[in-house]
Length: 99
Image (cartoon, rainbow, N blue to C red; front, side, top):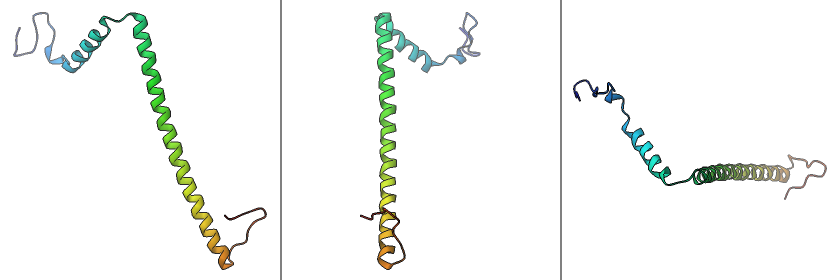
């Protein structure tokens, strides 16, 4: 093997070898070596479910944050209306109640 031009005796360019990818592939190969096809499919389904649950959790947190911000805005508007109503600069619309 020649180390000067990174070409081995089979003509492969060793400079193109991705050691991180090789490590990843070897880990997968070792992991799946003892598993049946059913086990591999089951694990893939479980991973999909975990990812879906994580996405749903993030969406729920985002929705809760949006609701919290909207409640704060509504409270601020109500306070402003109350202050204007106390000054006489605001008239309640029909059916409007300020709490």
